Length: 283
Ligand code: AMP
Image (cartoon, rainbow, N blue to C red; front, side, top):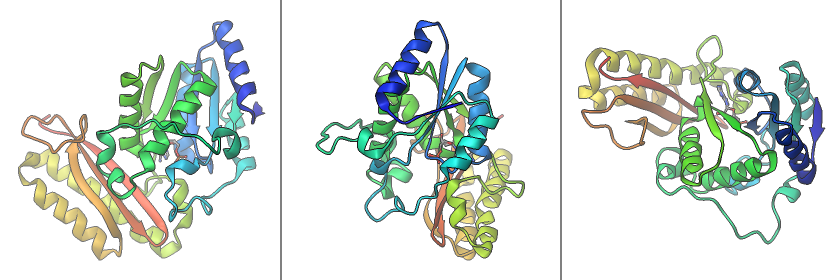
């Protein structure tokens, strides 16, 4: 496994691999890797000849008051894990190389970004669409793997790739959880023992809601959402949103909805926890 830091070297490497007919998969990450990230690498490994993992804490997706400076990092351990899972290249650029000081160009998705995390984090998806575009132009992949953990991000990237004709296949891999149900996340590192325990209310409530919706359909969706809100609030979580949207469009669901995205975000201590389940309706 090789570590590449320079943009031009990464582009040269990928160009050469493509000339040799190799299929390239990229897994974009912000590092501090856990089994959720590693499952994406496994998926990429099955689909492609060359697996590139990008490791870059992207400053443009953080608002000034957010946790850019304290975001957990452990580059050496990340590289060890990437190597163990058969990664070919770790691409870890410097922020100053990625972003010219006088940059004036952004990539903006204008509809899906306005829901869920986009409401409380207005620059978040602009930063993500821009950095993912740049990482695509630098790593030149045939395939890119994202996680269902960030369901809205996966939808937005899929939309961006369609709308801008990137010749890249997007694969969305399942959400990986701890044994007790907590969605794996680099930010779980911020939780103390009590917060981690109380944070389990999120996945538990989502699973309970899923059961209720599968049994009863969306007729009493309001009640189901209130149950989630009450449970999380009682456990001391500071809720950003609890929503049930059409999983394909992020619009309010109507009676024809096929799959619901039940999604929630709440702070426990310093950690913003997000989680979701997909609920098939009427099956
Ligand atoms: P991050 O490093 O948090 O930006 O995440 C990088 C990629 O890993 C994104 O596509 C995430 O959706 C994915 N990811 C993060 N946590 C999980 C998880 N628990 N299960 C599956 N994918 C995940």
